[in-house]
Length: 337
Image 1: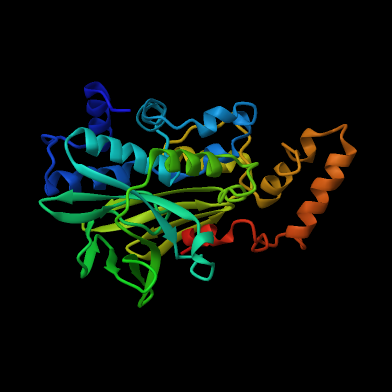
Image 2: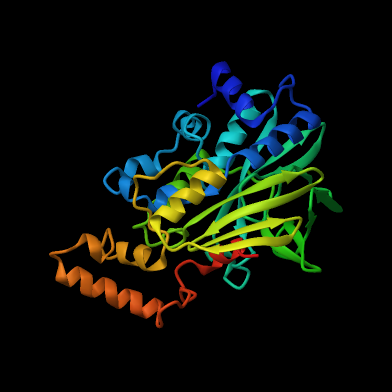
């Protein structure tokens, strides 16, 4: 599916792109950067109770739907949603775009290669030179395109490089805390639209046992600070704000009202009338058909007892943080400072 001229105009206005859209490196940098700084990576829809009876709204994967979600409704999305929109726009203005699926290494390098979570991105070719373009690797990924030929690239406050390993022709690395850390490995091989749809359907459904986000609530976006950048991140019950790689604010989120306020103030996401499962106990309880906490189940003693037992298993003492659950910590930890 292609974008229409009207959709492209709306998209360019949203990301603040005002130049002539043509397939040049300068335009690629401006569009990819505008996209990354405009649309948050978020799994809010996965854990929005208002969508429990509208699962197709979570898993719908076509350009018109995603364009409305991002541009008209001011939302973000998961990697495959955000990068699919970006790739469609780039293709439609004449760029040579190869969609790819990479293997997560940031928290999954210890897994067998075929078990590592998949991440969507793209390789864009300009004048026979290849660039990795990715706007959605959570709270630590690229802000701008990066050439595949190697060398260190400074992107605002972040440093990235691409290396070759025995496992992968290309590995994207980030420089953090005085060491280079691998984010994901990939090859120059086109991914199909079917594979993108399957990845989206799996991760969008919180009741899919293979979903990487079924017990992980996230919303994160980089912010420009002149030549530097910061990041605002919600990871489950914690809000973190980082500026120029230094933590400036950390806040524990304890109520729905507090979460709604933070989403509105920091990300302009308005879901104030929805119950959002951002606590581990609520996400785990939903796996057992407990859609809301005990206060909403006045006449369901069995559900309240099971909910309480899940809470005790993961919050052994009042005030404790959740245990590092095996269902989602690999992806979850990438948002921590």
